[in-house]
Length: 395
View 1 (tube, rainbow, N blue to C red):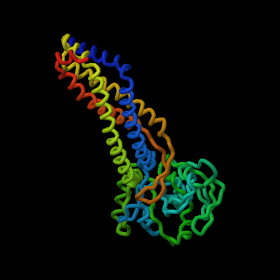
View 2 (cartoon, helix red, strand yellow):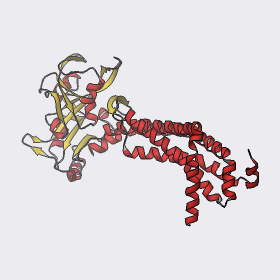
View 3 (tube, rainbow, N blue to C red):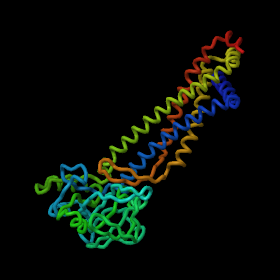
View 4 (cartoon, rainbow, N blue to C red):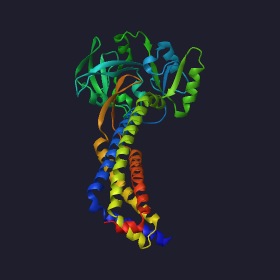
């Protein structure tokens, strides 16, 4: 066993030392694999960033109530009486002002992008008195909160980056002029892509009468969700459904996230085929250039298996070096990059940041290793099958 391992180490070391003599081909293989990894990480970091933007931070103690037949807030509708019954349900948290439940409206407006000046869809939300308290990660970053009953709005940090909405300016939305009085953060979640105002002001501005679309409710504890949900679904006066905010937002982002992941994997797979052929060409060239050396080693008593493993290890080494370079380049180029895209399930813009996670980097390195393994396997088998006598006569 020791002799077997010694043979593998000896031939592998010999192969690695000879790489500088083949630096052109080796560099081409490493760069090809680095490109595959960079694209793989870059595209999937979009999906990770979008998923993170749609997933609120914190515990599962916030629920969203919609009409039972609705899949999104846009297709939901609730009367004031229904929102009152929801606020009176057991399982809700309460403070000095009463139940922590916010009856809300959700409309889509057009605002110009900072980068291009072209209009894009932006969520404009009317919130109740408890709207900010319900969301525990809400924080005013600049300016102040809007005042009830006035045409004042506060803008999420993501929306402020993407659109021409600055604190202190007036903007025309619909038939009304609105004062932008504050900038807020929401834990990096979807709320940061929205504009907020008083629901009582938004209702007449968009002719919504006395209706709402959803109720955001703070639960007494995460364990209170089932009690709250059962109280609503068993009430004959209500036809509603309750879901946890985290689950609701994850579902709202699923279509685009899955598309981006599928698209990214497809592109990476096509590039991987090209990189695989590059690795095969490199390793076949390496084997051809060392035909006599490999034959000499086998004539001296080195077995076929050590030869195969040594060539595979060389290919893996090149692949992992290329993969590491590609992963590092993708991390520094993409992680934290700010962007905005349309969420197909709400047809509104969502601001987010590309997110390169450690798990994604691990997947990329594994992908590089797979390319390297198969790129070295077939040339390795060829090296082991070379007839010793014929190989020794090659020049």
